[in-house]
Amino acid sequence: MPALTITVLGSGTSMGVPTLGCDCKVCTSPDPRDNRLRPSVMVQFDGRTVLIDTTPDFRQQALREQILRIDAILYTHAHADHIMGLDDVRPINLKQRGPIPIYGSPETLTAVHRAFSYVFESLSPESTVPKLTAHPVESGQAVELHGIWFETILLHHGRGFVYGYRFGNAAYLTDHSEIPPASMERLYGLDVLFLDALRHKPHPTHTTLQQAIRIVEQLKPKRAFFTHLSHDLPHQYTESTLPAHIRLAYDGLKIHVEEQA
Image (cartoon, rainbow, N blue to C red; front, side, top):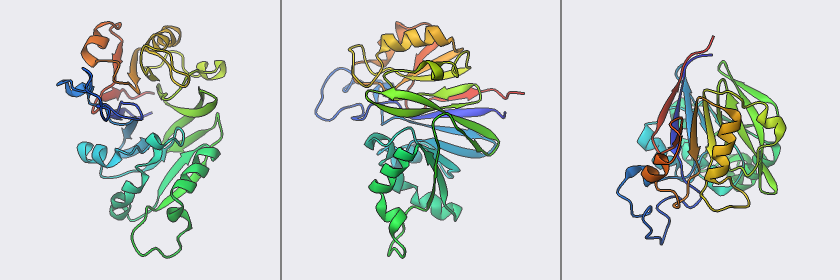
């Protein structure tokens, strides 16, 4: 497998940080790592670019990271903070002169179709619309994208479910309250593991910081990065309390995963 670069496009919650109307220490922090757009990552390899989710902040994220091509988009689930930036891929369509394939569970892609019906149902639009090809993926299946397999990892998100994705010796898991045993089996001993770690206080649909630490202790990745962080977690202080191999993700962070035989 070729070397990968994982870029954190956003590391915040559905409300983002700063959160509207909040003047807490994190929302008013001068530390740029406490500014957290909605959660997403970009995976780059061999000149290819794969996105996991398109948040409402996607345009801002793409400008910051100078995203010039998109070879595929993988969706974890269809909540607004994970899909609502999809319309902003239009300039990439024009540049690439072709459609972008999108992948996700059948339920997720049905919701994307409903939210962006004008993309999928308009036969002769008067203005530009995203050009997409939708590819449903069942739980446990893997998608081959330009030589790398992206395996779906089923996660519980409260009473619902989402997909995480494993690609080589890295995995990105966001918005989960529980990792089922069968999914845990696919995640032991990775080089890089992203986990949801919302805050200290329990939440019905997300993992707390302490729960995420326990998951890392079980799975034993070389490096772990916590994401989907609320304004309850100041970056500098929180990271000072963590073991050296566990870090908080922050917007713009780039993580390199070495080539594998």
